[in-house]
Length: 506
View 1 (cartoon, rainbow, N blue to C red):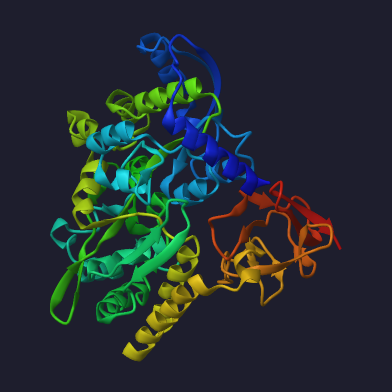
View 2: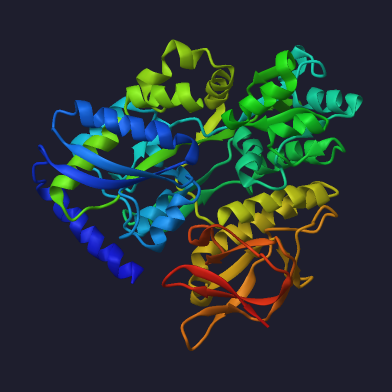
């Protein structure tokens, strides 16, 4: 049903590109999904549009609190019932295009977007040669926060000196090397490695150019090894770690307020350091990314025209500056980026400095995140260069296999969360080192069309999980993690038509 709806909406979208009816003077009831903290401002901005737009259009808007991380899952579950306009994180882009949940942007509007916005945000909005989304921010990157009472300013450019400073002070160096491929990739980007994925106009992944398993990748692995082997390394990106004996935390603009509240005048903010291998220095790279605004395809051509105008307004210079002032979101709009207020923000200045070494986050296969993050564990376990090379070889084997998945894996569903397949149970306390969110538990499709785990599992109250397809995060349900309310032994059941996840007692 979802596939049929996607085909229908694609046809509607194609027609809407040919001839828009006039939206002049019309009134429309619409729904917008925005993060909870942005709901009041979004309502005010729509009202400002109603009062000022030259079309004479008025929107009677309902703004519902739905996070950027969860909006895509909710849209894909039922595009027809989804919001007319929605905020979403760029890593959800490909699956939204595949589901027909984003209206293709006409050439004239696309040219305006490209001229007025950061190239990284434009890239994130593009599938094939077509633009499908409106850039909202260009602040989804990371840099380094540090405690100036522990870390001398003259040491901030050297990974080796920073590790030594933390070891001397017995303070943590928090950098997600074992729990997040997003952060771990910084070492590989430093040496010139790439992982570039290509999609077609329908958002399907068709090829990848990945050089992590290379001589340059081995240099990156040696750099990672220096950090993860140190007893002061902490695989975290939470600024709150400063309250738990950390002297350095690699995070983004979202951690600025927390770091400032804890460290006060001792808060230092700068770009990432360099590491040294065989006498040569490599400045750590990073991902640069963004938040995007999506518009759902419409049957009513006049409404489609009006929504395009509203989307342009909501992502324009004025509205982006208002979000910066209200929520400290970093603008993608080039004029807004150049404002005095944005230029004076220490976190955004550090991000801007780091972005000189950043790789624009394009569309990435949903399985890559799980495959790449394991490199950190494998490097920590390695005892010599041969072990480091084995870690890279293991990574490449898994990447290469993504385009050759058997149909039962590619289209099958599994469960992943605070669970361990080998131990055979779900749990909430994994402080003893048990792995979490790493094992996929297989599901089997029954004669009733429902998917169910191959056996019942013992579950503690409070454990969380998702059901996903093809060992990838491109299709994962529910939008928020499923949380077990009462301990017991259960099968996990999934209805792929409705996206409903449930438990069935043994």
